[in-house]
Image 1 (cartoon, rainbow, N blue to C red):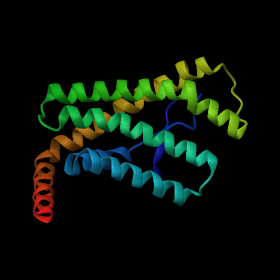
Image 2: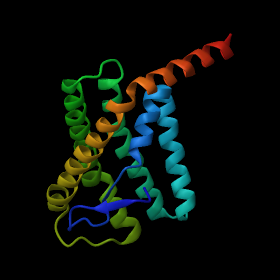
Image 3: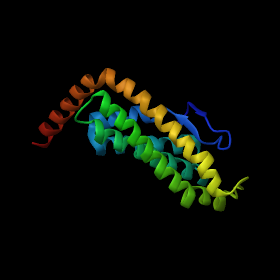
Length: 176
């Protein structure tokens, strides 16, 4: 979340970052609950480090939603089988999930909340902001983050699977 870049000029505050990559890796080692815990922890730490404020809370909450809408489909599609077809399906489904939920969220809740709480003014109608800003941004972000993750994951998935098995073995030993 600290290293990021804008891709759509009409929404310069929306930035692509690669903070979801380690969270995705955490999903594959620790499972769904562990991955969600990592995502929540990252969000809480970012909120505290950047200075708690209403604007930051909205942004961090939105980022958490974005993280989960890209990570969950990616995990469920890839956690049992890894091949080129599944990698492509995972990127496409995760990107569609991210784009759908964030477009809907920005149209119905997120942007109106920023407008109400911060007095944010739009230079174009909300529907156009979502159509020409939010939607293409999330398509681009989904493809970039998904592709980078798949490139990393394809190289280290055997090692990650071993770590996940070690974690499961430790968990079973401790619960006995």
